Image (cartoon, rainbow, N blue to C red):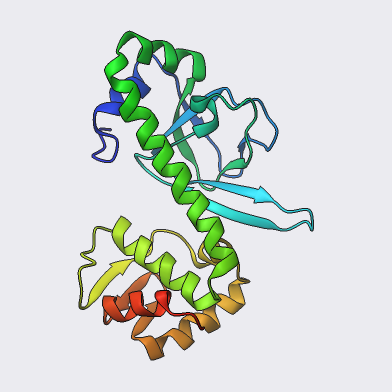
Length: 219
């Protein structure tokens, strides 16, 4: 159950924290619930999303094996600002805020690393939300694909990149603010940029060209 993404933080989270099996579709917390728990995904997938006044949803992030979430509980916010839902059958380590902070207080050298990792996650989700407002649909998809390639361990220096998507297309559509049927059409249009998506298989012919398109002003 060790994870390179967590490193020395893992023992802090696992120490004396209960492990729970959660069915697909279960709500872990809702917007406005007391922010009193911190989560580590042992297996499965969890999504964080925001409910819009119009009745729609904005997907913020999908967490999978070895990833952790629950920033509000660690930085002292009283309420969760988002919803957390199990997308699949999940096994989660669920640590209370009080227990984790007590463990960290006993080893103060770990506090900086813990808060730094959590802050990086928060900034990443804030960046994703900003992209929904300032980038065109194809630019948002390109950003998503670059991050997906990075999660898959692909080299993004330059040239050709091949990797597999780690979530279904409907979740990608929600992440970039498109309807699923519009995402399929957008994928087909992206072939002109050397981007080929077939189910979960992705080929990026030229990473530099992709970056240039994201940086451009137009769609």
